[in-house]
Image (cartoon, rainbow, N blue to C red; front, top):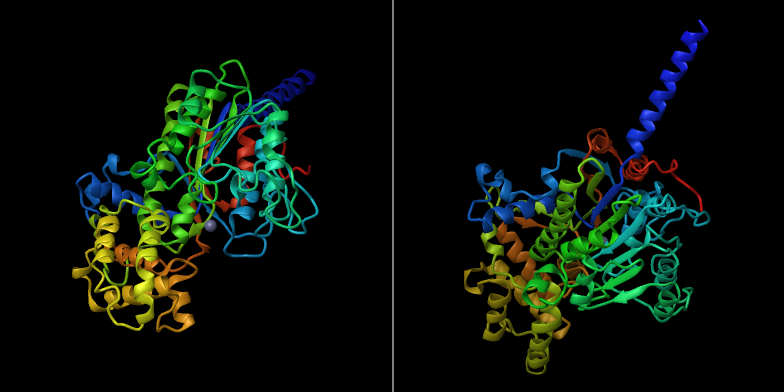
Length: 509
Ligand SMILES: [Zn+2]
């Protein structure tokens, strides 16, 4: 009898150990976060890929071809997550990142703290670091932005960016890469700290690199602690939109190159592995502005970064987990529009060569300087835009929008927007202007609205929306399977912790 009991006990002990090993043995873990990315952003990008590869976005046999699919949507495990935060159906990136970094619901604007802003929590990156893994944090926006911050900082207000950067410099994480810092030499707002982040990074043993060659050199000559900042940071200390990187800033790194660099820098066969978080942060910004091509460009760059992880997976299939998701949808992007019904015309998007941001800051800014003095005294004229061949040429050159082919309604909308952008006024009510433009440059957002609608892409918001978001995973069988099903965004952190054999979440600091 005793012998049987002993055998049973041994068997149970074996089972428990096997379960722990199964859940905890993932050595290399990637978390990819497309900010503002949900099903529409994925489907629009695949329809675009189908079109540039010579197929038709209205034919299933073309849409289904492997070369027209994103890496993420071909991954073997898929799930769905709800994105609301503690007090909002439409979350922001601070509370959503807190959910999948720390496993708790909180308020929009809060990072790594509870909704009462009293308790601080450790992220899975911090816990992974404590367990001996190396940590890499990569983003296409600034390194102190909400999503990356949730992996290393706890702050009651996401705008305390000097405080966030201070906490970054004190992490000891091995790799940071992407944009720069919003307020590296002092407070951006009242209530923030006032540290010199460059001095703090240096004192803590970090090397800062900001040229293409110096960053790529890390692949061959890794460093213990490094901060990689892109050479060109055109807006809010972020990397350029990928459409602009390709056409205007070729010396800049792509998110995929930054990810490859992080992998090579952090990989060590003998160590305990790594945790790498990669954020495609400007998918969200492009969707806020309702610019489909800027969105698609950053979706492709983000998916290429996923490809870099998949290439690593091919060499380490038993030890790697890759998880890809979004934090919320942005812009209310739709696949289909009232004016195109069941047709799709993605070829309409192919000629756009600059993001809304680049156009606004460059060609539009120059046009405004040249024309406002002569035009604005006659702002009530009905044909300020129609009679300005320079502006009509600009719309054609930058967006491929052919004014002569537009209907009278579209021309009227452009005329109103042109007057508002050039002269600050038009004959719409304020409520109408708010609906048409939000807080964006009226002429630019009207151009992208018309262009996108022609392609069959619609927008309903300049903010985040509340639809559930897909999640994809690839890794060794049972660990990747953790991510199938329909669950809450806080469960992502718990599943990631499980996959790395970290303590149960949430863990208070
Ligand atoms: Zn956003």
